[in-house]
Image (cartoon, rainbow, N blue to C red):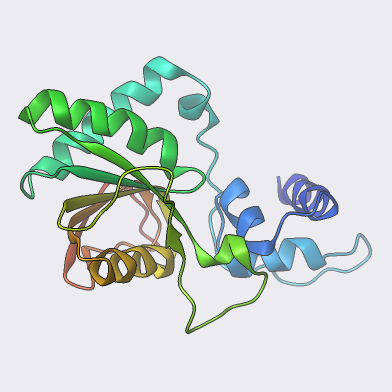
Amino acid sequence: MKQKLINKAQELRQHGFTTGEIADELNVSMDTARWLTLQKAEEKTEAPVDFAINWKSIGGNSTRLSYVSGALSDMALSHGEADTVVGIAVSGVPFATVMADFIEDMTGIDTSLAIFHPNKHRKDVDATDDEGTISTNFGSVEGKKVVIVDDVITSGKTAREVIHTVRDLGGEPTCVTVLIDKAGLSEIEGVPVESLIKVSRL
C-alpha cells in the first residue's frame, strides 16, 4: 500500500500537482504528501504518522454521495439554519453541492453554494500570512450563515483558513462538516466540527 501511495504521489507531481493538491488527492496530510514525493526506491526513511483515506466508493457513486451529503446536512442543521454552503475545493465541492439542495429542502430557506480555493492549491509553500479565497463565480458569504464542508480534516489548518476568510467577508460560520476527522477536533476557532467518522489514535 505504501509503495502505491509513493508511486501515485510521484505521478501526480510529474503532472504538475502541488504538494497541497497531492495531499487532497490522496487524502493525506501535507507532511505525508511531501514525504511521498521525496521517496526514492532505494531509500528507506520513516513515514510521518498518518492515515491514507480512500473514499472513492462514495465519491464515485452519486447515490452514496447523496446519502452521505444528507447525513452531513442533518448534522450541520443541528447548529442552526444556514443559507450558504461553502465547499472546500476540490473534494468538498461535491458534498457542498448536494448539501445546499438538501438544506434548502429541509429548511425552506434559499441556500446558495460557494467555493473556497485554499492557499495550498495556489502555492507550493507553507505560507502563514496568505489565505485562500472564495470564488466569485458562485454564491457570496457576506451577511450569510455559512456551513463549511470538506472531505477530510487532517490538522484543521484549511478549515481555520476558511473560517477566517468567511468572517473577513462578513459571513458567520455555523459549523464545519466533514466525512472524516483525522484530528479528533470538536471545534475550530469556536466553530463546531461535525464528522461522520472520527479517527482516534491509541
